[in-house]
Image 1: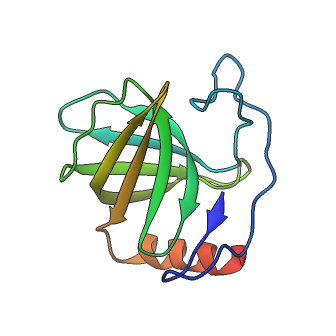
Image 2: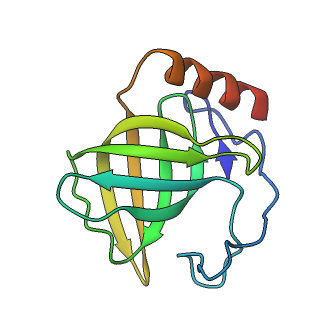
Amino acid sequence: MQIFWGGGAPERRKQPMEAFEGEEDPRPGAEVESTTVWIESATGPIVRGVVEVLSEDGALAILPDLAELGAGEDVTVRLLLDRSQPTLAATARVLSIRRLAGRSECELAWTHSGAEREMLATIVASLG
């Protein structure tokens, strides 16, 4: 996962960890990153992926190619940043979906506020 703040350069790449038992990483030939994401929309099933880029403003998630998300769609998100901690809840708007060979890149912009947004900002700051 690359960390960016406000258009700056990547600050840190997290160490990869093993996949969940029985689940595959949606990126062909890649290791599972430590930040797992679940995205749920009103129009489709919950999609599991990995966060490639995380910032205070949004995220870039790598999802299986079958992801049924569309640009402009409002979604609910759960982030697993540390397996020993609870997931972090968020809401976001899908900015774009890029379909590539065997995967989709989903760009999200956070739309939530309050305690969860403050917690996310603290986590992003601590990763740098």
